[in-house]
Amino acid sequence: MKMQLRRQTLSLLLGAAGATALSGCFPLVAGGMAGGAMVIADRRNPGTQAIDRGIQLEAESFLIKNYGDNVHVNVTVFNRRVLLTGETRTEGLKLEVANKVKAMKNVADVYNELVAAPLSALSARANDSYLTTRIKGSMIAQEGVPSNSMRVVTEASKVYLMGIVTEAEAERAVNIARGVPGVKQVTKVFDLISEADKRRLDGQK
Image 1 (cartoon, rainbow, N blue to C red):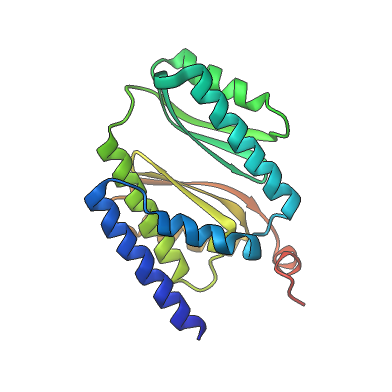
Image 2 (image 1 turned 135 degrees about the horizontal axis):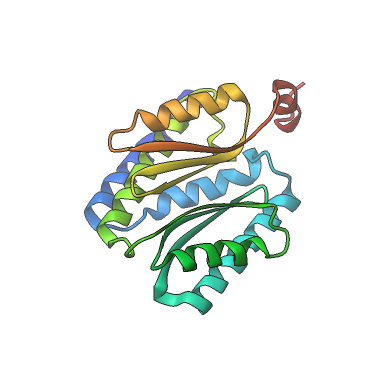
């Protein structure tokens, strides 16, 4: 039954990925499925999950209000660590954005992967969404990868992986991402835990 569910989920994700390539829009089905399972399997406690959502909403609102079309910034938050990817029109804006986000309440750390460059085209963003969906689908199909406790972010065909994982899980996730055609680079932004911590967080004996 478990393997059958994985196959069905993978089929839905890959189908959505194909739709992404045609329409240029990120598939809502993938986000909805991840969101539905996230609370059950996420290794963060509910309080941390709520804090992460609050940080993301605050940062995104701040960026829209203060920078508008001068930046294209994706904000990803996991375990109070903020990953910033995308483009700013100047080097000064790149540093300013990171500093402003780092000063926000509850932010533990900021990984500034922004680049000072012209804002990316919609076609490039659609391709990044497609790669992300392919990677997520491959992770769901692979035993031993806690995909519901991870974030996959793709920017300019470069992949960033966030989550609370063991060394072995991190290695498997990186190998999966590297194996997807079109991926140029994989960067780990993991919180590494021991096997004992994994069993505790997963509720295993």
